[in-house]
Amino acid sequence: MAFEQAAIKIEKQLEFSKLQAAVEQAFLAEKVEKFLKQLDRKGIRVREFDAVLSARALETVVGASAAGSSLSAWQLYQELPLSDQAQMREFYLSKLETVGIELRHKFKKLYQYY
Image 1 (cartoon, rainbow, N blue to C red):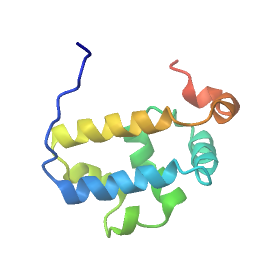
Image 2 (image 1 turned 120 degrees about the horizontal axis):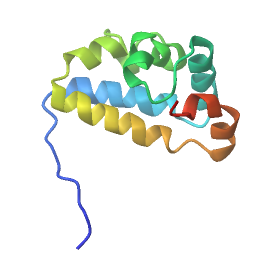
Image 3 (image 1 turned 180 degrees about the vertical axis):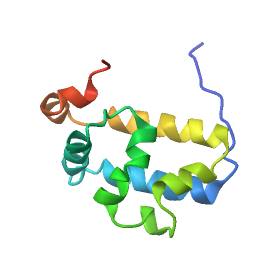
Image 4 (image 1 turned 90 degrees about the horizontal axis):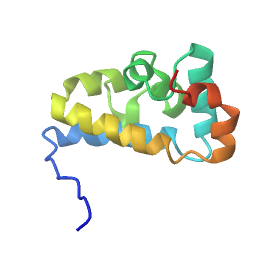
């Protein structure tokens, strides 16, 4: 029997989906390198999701508002309850692992743990 992660219901679906769309856009093939360059310029490691949000790095890459919302990505994240925030961090971490090996190597400093 394989491990299966338990599904946890999203409480604030609208805010979650807007923030999720912004994260997905940042990791699109045509935008991911710009996103990683932005993090590099600001000295933010790719796994530091709170720092990414507070530096408005998503907005810089995907546009002024996160996926059509009047709120910033940071504000959308703050609107979420803790369980939704945890799921958003997991989603973000799973997306950053989809970045191609050549970009990971180019931005290896951002991907280092320490």
